[in-house]
Length: 405
Image (tube, rainbow, N blue to C red; front, top):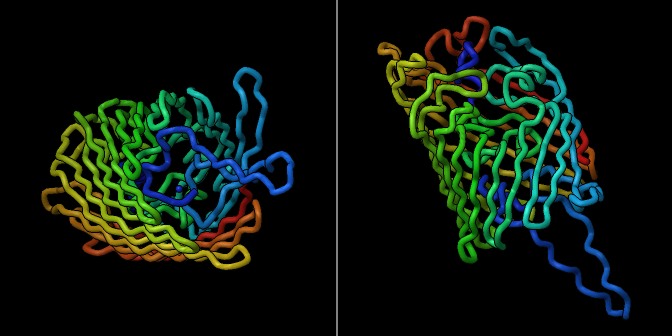
């Protein structure tokens, strides 16, 4: 989700992890019954485990839910997170300082996961910080992005392999999720900056045989409240391997843009994502292509496109320690003389980034840190970092401490 065009001018711009389509399983999750003990006693109950929604890639692990008896609604499950962070950065853009701090998550989510009708609702405060983009305060994210209820939807389950969801939904696009606790790294990456994050609409999920799962959605794209967006995914999963193809596009163009709805809303975007999950390792390389067409209604005199690739990896160690890393490269087309639309740091610019995230988790408590570096290439002066937008690189350190309950 592009919080801003990557410049000094903001405003337009899974249990076992799997590509993002697995965030919405096609039917209610099923847990195998535990084996009965040898003695003639009643079977032991399975130990409580974290639910699959919201998806958490790792290495952070969600907590078992708090079960609530809700009368005619049946059993409901409650979870949440409270976390804060500090952001330290070089070459801050106007409106930012070298050190920032705020609440990164203060959210609860409640859900019904059994029966032919289910629901999910997530509410609270959040901060969405992305590499190479201006830092925005939690208060601004809450008021100018997705409000105090960023995700909420009903889910119908007419069969074991089919489900239908409608409401405020997580996007199918991309490999990284919207909220910090869901990802390997605290900050979202450069490729994430071209993607949408939350959509409003209807989504159908279907398991196809033993290895395939498909999802199709009619939605409002980049949270535009203009329902011309279509997106879909097809995922093949076998053993530790998963391969997903994802695409999204729009039936028409709009002249609506704001912090949550950037110029990418009128374009197309495609992902090819491979995920390997085995033992202590998570490895996820993917490639992405997106295109923004000419649209004079919003000042796009000449459209442009961007290609990017990333490798995300995570390794868990003993006693609650883990390490995650990310490398990305992205480039865009265009010419500043025309002028073409700016998708990064001026028309025709590119960028690469490195991020390392050591993490420690003990039961519900966790602490972790991001150390990241972004380097812009082919930058147009005025669209980079620093007070004048003339510096081509930025280093950030982010420290996050919190509880998942």
